[in-house]
Image 1 (cartoon, helix red, strand yellow):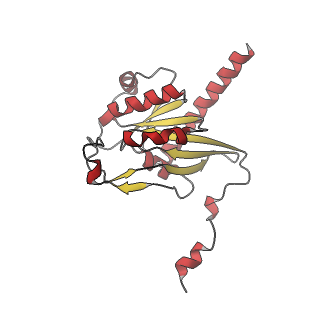
Image 2 (cartoon, rainbow, N blue to C red; image 1 turned 180 degrees about the vertical axis):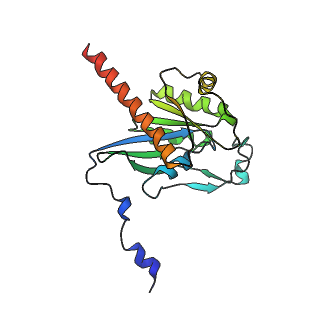
Amino acid sequence: MDFRSSEQTLGPRSEDVLPETATAAVKVVIVGGFGVGKTTLVGSVSEIRPLTTEETMTQAGVGVDDTQGVERKTSTTVAMDFGRISINEELVLYLFGTPGQQRFWFLWRGLFEGALGAVVLVDTRRLEVSFDVIGRLEERRVPFVVAVNSFPDAPHYPLDEIRGALDLPDSVPLVECDARLRGSSRDVLMTLMRYLQTLAVSSAAIEAS
């Protein structure tokens, strides 16, 4: 008997099935420069087997992709990462991770269609790669929060210094996280949800006035 074939006919795993109690779904995009931990965050927090489009880095990217600070990275996302997490019995987040290299940014338009918000992951070793990402979100008027991914060998700075370096408005949430840890990644997403709720309440108050 071919056990691999038998397993494939059993259908989706129980954890892959959307809960019947789910009544609302929110699309969230995870963005950031090359090698900041987007794939790691989606993989750590997703309750389903994450879909990844990681490919081995080749000589074709030499001189095109900026690998300074992440020289040991051997793979890269070429399309997107996808995952799902249930915040509660009713609310489900669909997570879409974008490629970090600018040569793949043409995919942004499709990935951001229908998205309510975004998480910007940053690496203190390479803050400069986050400027263009944040600028593009501001141009698209996509609400976002910024999460500083705590790499073991990365320098640590106070959040107010990072806010100043990124020229972030005080209204934009800025938090620290470890993208490898499910709880930490979930906290980042909860920060985004609270921020979106605050924006919605403020918008409703303005319309009512």
